[in-house]
Amino acid sequence: MKRYDKIIDNFGKRVKRLRIEAGYSQEAFAQEAEIDRSYYGRIERSEANPTLKNIAAIADALGIAIADLFSDSSKVSRR
Image 1 (cartoon, rainbow, N blue to C red):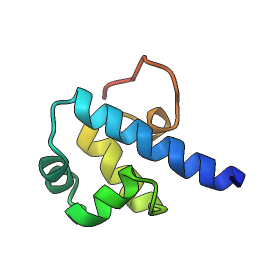
Image 2: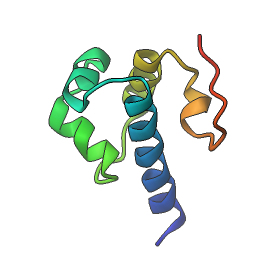
Image 3: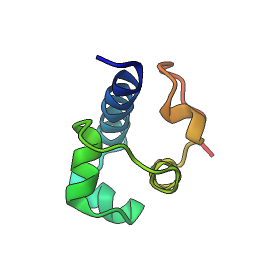
Image 4: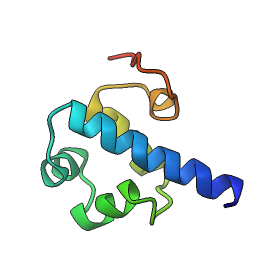
């Protein structure tokens, strides 16, 4: 697996975990983030490489900093 594939995989897993912890269904979260639900599902499954715009939308919908989407830390900075 190439390095960037691992980054995309880790990102998708992290976003899914944070979404679940926040109590959102995938459909409700995609709507909150204003991202197409099927595309959002592809992000979580590491099938899509999200743009910075979509990364920012995901962070905003979770109420966290963009950097927290890439951190393995269990401590997340809420805005």
